[in-house]
Length: 527
View 1 (cartoon, one colour):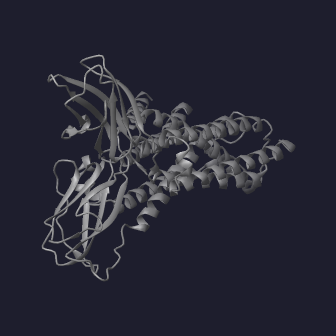
View 2 (tube, rainbow, N blue to C red):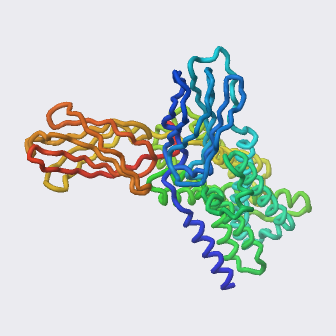
View 3 (cartoon, rainbow, N blue to C red):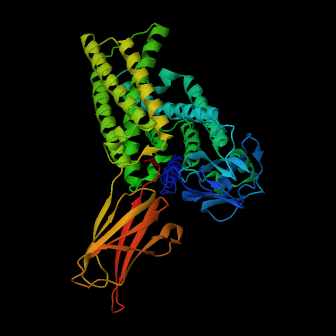
């Protein structure tokens, strides 16, 4: 028992120690040649610049001519992680070329796209080059839906059965019997399918080849893969026989929480706050849908074995669980939206993520209505379970789960909010205001102002940008004076994460005054 408890604790430590990356979905910021450009002479190199550092073995760049014929290019080689992918080009003939790229974001999400350029002149006709593997993306969403759905439903059934057994109803083993083995097998098959589909959408060598070669650093680069391996360990812990109920309740709790650590939370500044909220959301969804699943299985069990149970003592408990889980699921879901997208923008962005969010809201309202109908009908005959309302509410709950898993595979919409900060200089008590037009990937306008009566008008104002996590330092950017005490500069916020901004003013006497600020550029979204 002590060894098993130690193993469970270590598994939880590994789960919560998934290395947080401050990035979600990589974005292509710039290309050389640029998209749609017509160059006079054939370029020697192809350069793609992304919003975050990438694993060199995980970047794939393909080149096609106007007839759709692929032109062989050297692919990624092991080396330093960088935000730039460079490929040497052979001598290209005049015509239009299409570049198809595929990279892996720091949170493990594969990101792909394409652009075109022309040498000499554009071709009259070009063949459209397809990008991506639709079957693999669909398979990945469905397999992850299966795994996450079974884990949440399994946890909810076990928790509900634990309390139901105290009221004379079947426990987990009595209700499912050998179905527990089938459920565990289905989860393992879903994990394997998820790995197969995930490997198919990744550029470079397959995950299975990397496992065979023992290149675990690349295998575990993705938090999603780490979570899959931890889930497999937890399933093995569930198979340990003759443990206490607390053991299995704990393992199921960690299993239900594990999907929270495989995606979007690492693209937010308050990653651990987002993780805590997401874990709470998953637990409440597990209670809600898992509780309905218990009722659904119990109804099937009654019909198959021609038995009946008195539900009157269990109905009040189930009603309280359903109401509490529903309210907490809605509140935690709204908090997650605010943390990721800064509120109302998520509902108006017009992206697939936003449409799925509206779908979840509509289905949740429908589920609440069906829950109310179930409660009303059940109260009329407390000893008998009304099976039809349970089935309808369960089907809607499964639809909500599917929409949630689909959303976890998509970039979420980022808000268009500015950054305004009051700063104090390090050398003297000179207050100033720093304003950045948008906390967003790309080139942004920085405006800096202070009362020059305290210092006199400076000879020069420079903006310096640092990214300590990647040991990156950009060249100083000279700011232009727009009016007395007010300066502007275009700053390239070309990577997701924490930036240190230093504004340095050189006065006429050679004295320097510096102001420092720290900003977070969010990732994983689309503008």
